[in-house]
Length: 355
Image (cartoon, rainbow, N blue to C red; front, side, top):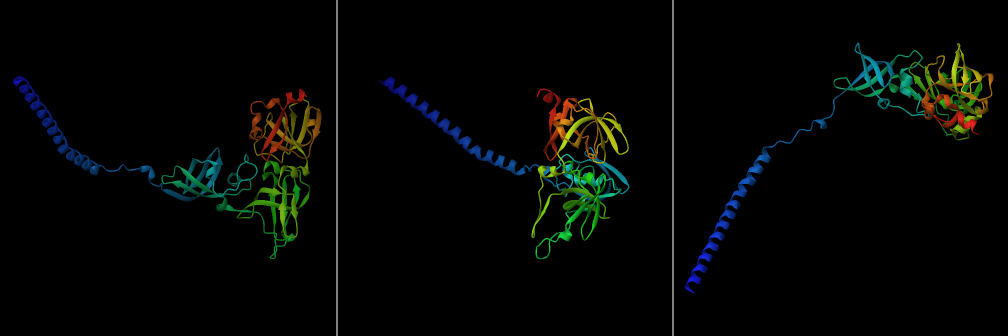
């Protein structure tokens, strides 16, 4: 019994020592913790936030320059006697208005690459080192876009003296006139779908024109089916109304001969030759052997008819973007019709043969 009490006493002492020792370590750790927190806090106070260089606004330089050309997404210009050629997409042109033909050059491109002998100025925004274009304006820098003077009187009735008459003066040339002015234009400046077989005189019409400061003009758009009421002028502007000037079919062909004002093409049927005028075209150059689409006032049954044919009206389309579904298989195409303002639906030769 005495021995049992002795063992219990030793065990109790051991447990007490263990508890005391654990408490002591816990106390030491608790006392050390505030020092650790202070140390972390002090280090955090010393750390400086990282500088975000990308958040600084890019410095810009705005200049007035003489533009030489715009081609292949590159703007060439002269500034203070030095010439520059810098990459620039179409989207960087300012003050654009977008017309029905998205494939043709936009208004700024036509201003820069005009065939009127106009020297073009531009307001260009660049980065500080002047090796990157941010924006470019040539529209306001050289003239203005004009829809014509308002055809309304003070009481909001229509003043017919202010409506435009279009006179077709020969080939693709024309004049627009009203009581106030006469403007000379080239119908070949129009979007592809608006290059129609116009009669000698049309009244009333609604032209959209870019006027250079010296009075020369680029014809941007033309509404010809204009309705006039006592208090309203409106235009029916769709492909169906344009067919009053002829149902046009595009024939795929190869250029055989080129003269001053006409070319002769062989349709893809291999037996039908057509001689057509060249004043309506999409601006791309032609050569013997060029594969083109020729828009004619003719039915699709011209394909396969054979023989020689002459037309007074045609549009020469050398840019395959208008019939992009046909890329890589031109020789297999027969003809096409408009499926949108700037697109065509194509018929292949094998589709005709299998009918």
